[in-house]
Each structure stands twice: as structure tokens, then as C-alpha cells.
Image (cartoon, rainbow, N blue to C red):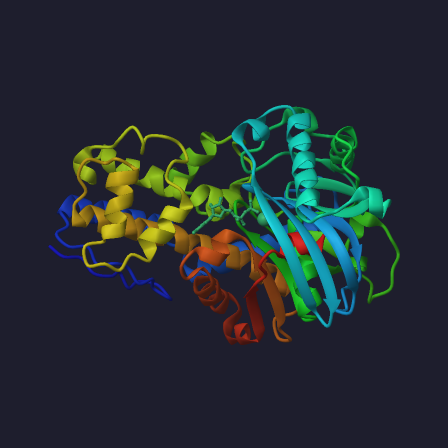
Amino acid sequence: MSYQTSTEGNNAPEFVPIDYISQDQLITIEEITREFDLKTERLIEISNHFMRELNKGLEKYGQTLAMVPSFVTGRPTGQETGTFLSLDLGGTNLRICQVDFQGNGVITIKQEKYLVSEAQKVGESHILFDFIANCVLKFLVEIGYQHEKEKEKVNLGFTFSFPVAQTAIDKGTLLKWTKGFVCPDAVGKDVVSMLQESLDRLSVPVKVVALVNDTVGTLLSHSYKYPNTLLGVILGTGTNSAFFERLSNIKKLNISSDATEEMIVNIEWGAFDDEKDVLPLTKYDEKLDLESHNPTYQIFEKMISGMYLGEIVRNTLLHLIDRSLLFNGISSPELNKHYIFETKYMTVIEVDTTPTLEDTRKILEETMNIPSVTLTDRQIVKRICRLVGRRAARLSSLGLAGVIKHCGAVEGGCGIGIDGSLFEFYPNFKENIRAALREILGDNVDNIEIQLAKDGSGVGS
Ligand code: ADP
Ligand code: MG
């Protein structure tokens, strides 16, 4: 039999038709579709819960949403000028930039990327920070910086995308690692000191002057260009967001201020619902969480971000293989490996419009080494990618809607800058976010501008 789209619920996704599907396959695929579906009503409920959590985090320290005050006050005017060095440790890459602010919202950058190895992610922290310091040195050589001539140390802004308890613009202690990093001796230490020590040890003529979360950086650089910006968001290896909050709302800071003063707050939204009270976790999500470096933490992030989506798909495929409903019940040593099925493969599969899904076949047969993959198999895999990718976009929109409502910006509208390869490359991510935002906020969504804030995280610091 042939199986077309399921049309239940609002904004029903467009699914790939599946040819020649068996009754057993059909039943299981429909069940999986239901598991990953996130109806409007549920979306609104969870978004309301998210808003309550925002307030809790603003009132007290140690809440599920850390709501970290950034100590960045005021907004850029777009007229700031000067040349600066920035360093951005994401989850996958280390980026070093020379940023030139030319005024009128114009920015030019020179950038190099360096890959962080597994050994550097999980070893002692000085190995990681020495590696970073070495990359800075290489970069200075690359851009022709001559310390003998310049005398002064170069000021560097450090974008560090892990949860930090910030105590000043250039000070913050690491609360925990996420996204597969685990250097245990770094937890509880000041991130700037660790980097500065490595720089000094290697005689790199650089002074770390600002510590900024990547969401804060994204928000700042986006608002340099677009003054109406309210939110900076990361959808890359991990996910998180920051926004301009009224200082008087950050009750836990206990600072008296007038109604117009603002400070950027880093939500650390990846930890939303670590209690697992409201998010619709499937058995595939539970398996991922259990087998991760940080079980029971970053539950929202694990359903949304680039590090994890491929792994959710892999878990779902294994479930089907175990029931002999996919690949004739045969897996491969490759597909049995954790995190082998990368999120970027989902992008390739989602955009595969060849009649026989040839690109999908290549990934499954050639990269994953599955012996034989029928057209039905490929269509099933494509459908699962779509379900997982679409759910991720819908979940991120409930966070966006929560902040927009919290700030009273529903009617007046606002700008949102989003950085990260998931948002940049995953097909229809933005469209799916907008569609879900419309379900939550209604036609007010027309006043909300969502844009890619490419390299924003580094520029902002
Ligand atoms: P970081 O989060 O480390 O700063 P990025 O924003 O570049 O870095 O995000 C990297 C993540 O984005 C990777 O972990 C990967 O999951 C995801 N990604 C990279 N390329 C693609 C792609 N073509 N399609 C979808 N996701 C991608
Ligand atoms: Mg990044």
C-alpha cells in the first residue's frame, strides 16, 4: 500500500509519501509520528510554563533557568568604532576574529576556525586552554601583528558558550560543562584566569578584557546592526538565548534602578525542564539522555540542538531495525555507534529531491554501511528526519514566544538574531519556527523579524 500525509492538527507537516509500506510499518510509523508531534495546545502550555520559569530564575539564584546577569548594560548605538580581537569557543569549533567596527552598523571581520579535538574536550583544563592560547598566537602571526612594534597588549573579548556564574564583565566561574565537554578540574574556576594563565605561560601578548556568553555576543552584534533587537539566540551544537531585561526585574541582583535601565540576561535555556515535567520526551530522547555525558541535564537542549538531533534519529532508526521494520532488520557496526549519525546528514536527506532518494541512499549505504536500503527504507528515514527537525524548531519557538510575552513585545514586535549552523543550514528551520510562533502569538508574528546573525557570537564580545 502507499501512504501519503497525515493531516491531523494545525499546521500539519508535509511528509514524504512512502511507497509500498507494510501494515506493521504503517502502524509503527504512525506511532512515531504521534510521539514527535507537538500540537498547538501543548506548545502554548509549555510556553506558559517557560514564562513561569523565567520569573523564578530572575528572583532567585540556583533555579532551573539560571538567568545569568551578564553585567552588560545599555544597548549599542551602531556608532561605536574600533578594531578588536575576539575568541569564540562554541561546542565544535574555536573561532578567532579580528573585528573592525566602522560605525553606522557596519562591521568587517577577519576570521580563522580551529577544530577542538576530543582529547582537548575531556582532558585536563590546561590542555584545552593552552591549545586556545596557541591558536591565538597563530592568529596574531597570520594577521601580521608585531608585538615589538605595538608594545601594548591586544585586548581580547572571550565568547565562552558554557554556563558561567558571572561576577563582573571580565570574571566568571564555570558552573558546569555541556555539549560533550567534561574537563572536570575547570568547574568552579574563573574562566578568564584560566585563559589568561595559558596566554601568559606561552607569552602571547593578549589581555582578556571581557567574558561574554555566545548568546550575549549574538544579541549585542545584532543590535549594533538592528536597534529593535530583543533576543540573541544560538542554534548550533547547543542552544541558548539572551535578551534585554529591565534591571528592576532582575530581583536577585538587589540593585535599585530606574525603569529604563537594562541589563542583558543569559537565560541558559538549554536546562529548561530538567525536571522533565512538561516536555514531551519520547523513548528515543530518554535513551539519548541516559547515555549522554550529562544525564538529566540540558533536557531542552537535547531535544533541539545540532549535537543531538542526529542521535535522536539514530535511536529511532534502531528501534525500527529491532522490530525488523527497517533495512530488513539489519543494522551495521557504524550505525550502532553513538553520535555517528550527524545532524548535517539530516540536512542532506531533507533536501534530497531525487526520485529514488539517491543522496539518502549514499548516506545509508556508503557512510553508514547498511547492506541494502530499499526506497521505502529511504522514505521512512527521510520522514523521521523531518519529524525530529520540525519538532526542534517548534520547541525553540516556544522559548522565543515565552521571552517575547515576558517582555511585553507581542504587539510592538521585535527583532531576533540567531547564530549557529543548525539554524543556518537545516532546511525550513526558520519557516517552522515562524509557523509555530504564529500558533502561539497569532498574527502578531508579522511584527517579529527573525534573522541569521552570522558570526554574531564572536563579534559581540
Ligand atoms: P558552535 O555551536 O560550536 O559554535 P556551530 O554554530 O557551527 O558551532 O554549530 C555546529 C553544529 O551545527 C554541529 O554540531 C552540527 O550539529 C550542526 N550542523 C553543522 N552543519 C550542519 C548542517 N549542514 N545542517 C544541520 N546542522 C548542521
Ligand atoms: Mg557558536
